Amino acid sequence: MGPRVRLRSNRVGQNEEVHMGKRVGILTAGGDSPGLNAAIRGFGKAAIGHHGMELIGFRDGLRGLVEDRWQTLDGAALAGILTVGGTILGTSRDKPHKMLIDGEVCDMVPTIIENYERNKLDAIVCIGGGGTAKNANRLAQAGLNIIHLPKTIDNDIAHTDTSFGFSTALGIATEAIDRLHSTAHSHHRVIVVEIMGHKAGWLALGAGIAGGADIVLIPEIPYSIDSIAESVAGRARSGRNFSVIALAEGARNQEDSADLAAAVALVKGAATPEAKAAANKHKATVEAAHRDNAFKVASALEVATGSNPASRCSATCSAAAPPTPTTACSAPCSARRAPTSSRREPSR
Image 1 (cartoon, rainbow, N blue to C red):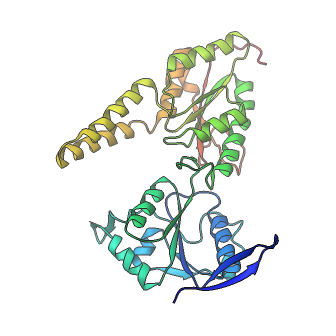
Image 2: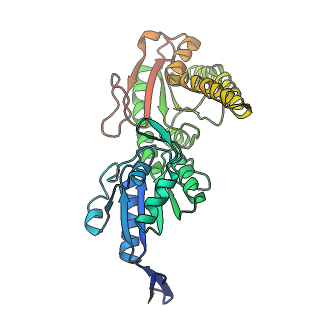
């Protein structure tokens, strides 16, 4: 016997099917992001109140699904979480087919299928970014009913206009860039603001435009330090002896971009497991060398513009406090600053 069906009229007088008795699981996976609890609450309110479904939440992402750790999400559990940060369900970055269990990497897809059937689920909602989308697709290919809700501040989910968390992160990064203008202007500095965005430049581009950055560097377009230095020098010659540069974390100069492309090609072209392992190790080394890129860009600009390297420092980009010149960054961006030159012309 199928699920009970009840008909009722909506506001425009159309008949609407409301499926009663459905049991749905929900989980959050991947990195933290604004809006997770709001998404859980929004889905839960509609599922329970409008469709009469039963909702359970799996703890700590896919690991909770494997270990069958869940809690009932009723009206009381969803109340008051709209403005709470993080996720009430916890999260993890586990992959269902490569999960570390008791020190061994195991394929846990069969276990997930067993728990899905044991809990008599009709579907699972996975809230997460690109990695979660891949994992959700893997479970769907295994025959489960899966819904993926896109969550990432990078806004880089295919066929998605916008993702949970992007708008909030964009506002924070925009405010950070805007707040740094006064320091750049007053001290005649070039400030490099590093903004999250590993493979996509939506966050840096949007915040850079909205916050008034003079130069925006994104992963999609390899940059040249000489070209940046010339732009900075051009501004100085016109009397604007300061610049703010929005740098996406995944942005690379032309040489580094070519190195990464070659490393990726090695991985794709590896003919044996040994060769692929070696290629992946080389690719990881290339990627690790990029971690302090903001510092490298600041240092390179100091050399290119003849600045004094002793004046480097970092500034906070947290939404909770205004940027200060000696505080390490803790929000979706970090900043390095360097003087454009030793000249002290009026800025405008």
